[in-house]
Amino acid sequence: MINGGIVLLMNDKLIRLKKNIILRNMCAETSFLSDQLIQPIFISEKIKIKKIIPGLGNNYVFNLKEGIQQIENDLKNNCRNFLIFMIPEKKYEDSFNFNFQTSVISEIKNIFKNDIFLWADVCLCSMTTHGHCCIFNHEKIDNEKSLNALSDLSLSYANAGIDGLAPSDMMDGRTAKIRSVLDENNYELIPIMSYSSKFASNFYGPFRVAADSIPSFGDRKHYQLDYRNKNEALRASRRCANEGADLLMVKPGLLSLDLINPIKQQTGLMVGAYQVSGE
Image (cartoon, rainbow, N blue to C red; front, side):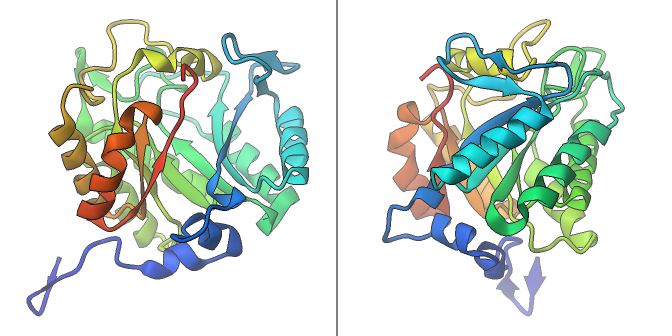
């Protein structure tokens, strides 16, 4: 927006990245610290006991009780930064119930409070009947409905006590929509760590099994980035920065190392690398 001729970006609230020691350590530019490593945790409503993720060695999808035990164990090893993926039992077409996800967030935060920083992956793929990250209208992406669902999901996570949000869907405009909804509801201090340069990739196979999000038709190349297009990847990260993201991400990590420095130089934001399941 324009104010007296000065351009104000939506992500100029620098205090968002200072609200606790874990987040401050995560954003430290001159040190490599354990708080800069984020542990993914998969929690499913469907399972009675933990299930091994095929292709990922001794990594599991947990029920809530076992997920809490895993967080306790990780804390003993000085891991305090977590990214949670929640898999509800019921699937939907275009309207959603977030009760399972919000109950998971509430219980985890009630137990661990500020001892951990809890990020939530924000996407629809684990909730849709078709396994895609969006809502369709006659087999075409309905971007507006998808953004509304993603912002409703984000607000429900905020109400449940989440520390930070990580939108991974790659819909056009989702960062701006989520930032706007958070700010309108007095959650202006919840940071957004955007999957800003996320490529369509076969490396996500084990993850999609874990998240129960294998597409039932087609693939995700019509909304995730083409690995052949570096300029498109840079544009995607610049867009997320301009829309209000506080932190950016490249994914897959090892195959995107050449993007980290140019994204940081062009946006001025911290950039993380997600080393995915197939890597």
